[in-house]
Length: 480
Image 1 (cartoon, rainbow, N blue to C red):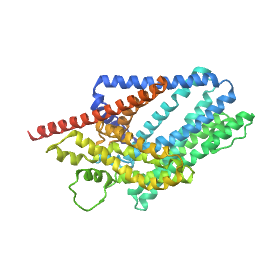
Image 2 (cartoon, one colour):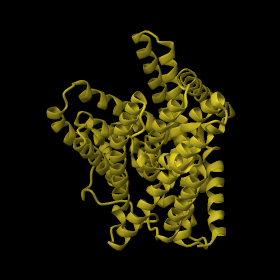
Image 3 (tube, rainbow, N blue to C red):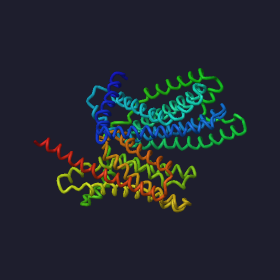
Image 4 (tube, rainbow, N blue to C red):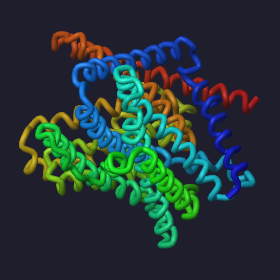
């Protein structure tokens, strides 16, 4: 495997990201960029100040420092798994995007490894942001007194967890390829990762309980695989722990390079769902989404997550798994693009198109939820857990449809998806934190949320109108 072509591919992804994503849509406006930066800065500042104030009062002795960092280490492991699953879902749709490199003098292995490098960069950027407030607070309070514990608990643990998950994905890809099950790779891989998350989540719960008991009783009897590096650090010191860490990194990277990766560039991403013609535009919108393999994979993932919740005695929350499917709404605009191009030539109405987009996604999600709602009537004790999931799903569809309109993931471009989620999520988090700190009246909070979602609807319809004008301008230039 040659390093130079991989380097060029990574540079190509970066250039594409800057030119086609950061200079596309609302991000072309410098005022929007400044406002998003200010919102992000305020969000990080509020979180960092909150963590710093908590640590200033709570972190006084070495025992408490170790307890908090060991507890946070298990949280970082869970977040690493969540980020990996999230990126696997996004990059599972990268096949069409990679076809722009089909004529490049690179092998499939080099192409997939370049995707792995870019995925790794994004993963660690997210993990850095998640742990930034804790690291900053510890450095401000104790300077470098616990720097070795920070490095072991955060860097070493997250790196090994991430690389271990990547090895699992490579092995699953290898098995699926030799069993001629390439189309099922993504759903099998994500299902295994979700199962790993469920097991680690249960272990993390018991670990926090054991660490709390040790802190209260003044003992040190907690033993868990999640504390492998922490125990090695206490037993053998920082230097030997670093040697063990580097050895594991070399072994895992070697396995990632050696195991063939056939996870991308599949031949087909659609299936024949129904073999009949329909004059119903709404049904056409529904089928444009349902016939996509990625949608079917996501539906299977919803049922798998629900099954895992039942097995772990969390059946009270099985309806919340449908929120996973609402994320797929970000692709609804692209899935229905061919229908839209036909409508452009006739009496196209943006608000009607928007209603079709929202309604089709809700029909799919509500239909999928029926298989969970029926057993939920028996297992779910609180009525609120039967209602809240549908409220969350409905509002999530509005948000993700807007994200898909603002930054359409053409050719399943993963960078558009990541950017759109960041652009939409940051203002939501800022508004949520602001409402929490302001402690407004209930009706004021409801009024603020209604205003916020009204803006989302108006932005979505205006975005569809802009897309129509752009299409007609392109057609005019092409013809004349």
